[in-house]
Picture (cartoon, one colour):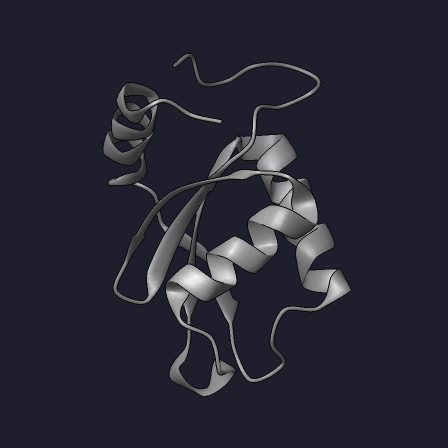
Length: 95
């Protein structure tokens, strides 16, 4: 679990990130979760977007994904959300 100060620091870092995943009509699949987990291992902090036709809100999608791949939800704003998971191999972000 992240403290509010850690979450604020990660939220500030996420401002400059590009959205690298989109959740569309295919929904949240095992393959998508695996790709998100690999991206989190490489980057530690990622931004994703929920499209209108997905059937999820950003909060719902973030919660489902966070539980599936054991990561933390940093923020949900509009249709975008940010996830954080420390890398097992090497730390890139110090919070």
